[in-house]
Image 1: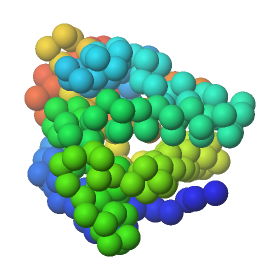
Image 2: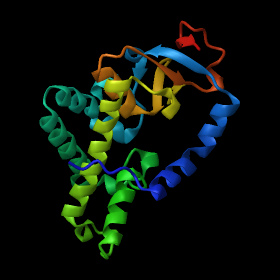
Image 3: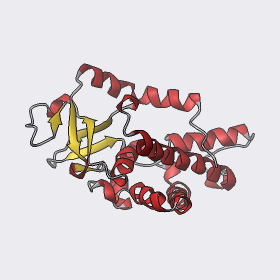
Length: 215
């Protein structure tokens, strides 16, 4: 079964995108232990169409696939891959930028492009130029990566040295996940009730009752 990790190029690109946010974290390291039941998914128009914008992590589809996987690994893998395929290929999210909640410019999209280039195939704006087999291969790699995260948390617990989930105190008075939905979903599926998350300094004036326990 495929367990290939992201290439060095993909990791560097992701680090470059997150650099401004990580620099902010270093300057203002406000960390809070929060109940996962108090977190909601990032509010985005595209996520609203998918049914989880502003809702609890149980509404984030991978949570369901993680839960299935814990009882039937292959069924969980197949369900996750089918959902990923539909989002990327059928719904055309490969054309919608990640900044708008789509997949264009994201890890899967970059992996699909690399696979086409490695195979010497042209990759353009028309989805008919996609090789479905290469898309399936890329999706399998990403799906196995996420189940690898689940297995790691199950066996070793949540390793904070690999990065904190990033949240904000939203205008709706709740704690909104901005980065780390899959990690929160995996932890929740495993029955973990509390995680330490990063919340920017703009929330520092809030009481701990409103956010969580500062650590």
